[in-house]
Length: 140
Image (cartoon, rainbow, N blue to C red; front, side, top):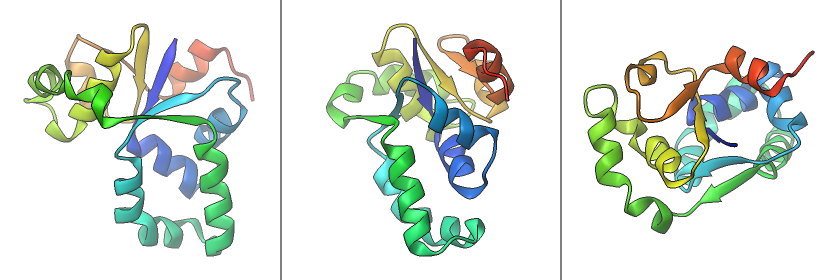
């Protein structure tokens, strides 16, 4: 099974020492994240840094820890799934097409997200944090 984390999950893990962060850091495997992670991080870095209350060095260390648990999916892998992914999310949120494309690119994958609207489609599996905890049989 391959778990794709979307931006809101990544940002939640960075902002707060939460269940989301614990799952990511303690999971024995790696998560998938589309190549846009670097663009999104750059775009929101100051806001995230402010919300965490961490010093820049502490924030960078945490980000590096989390990124060690993530395999970055390159643009080339996702290109051929873009059209299908856009079709799937066109009435939901086109910004999520990249995560859907990632799920289409990898067999036996799912998207971990807080976005309830993504469950409106039935082409890729969508899990929220409670469902991930149950799926991975995690106890805290």
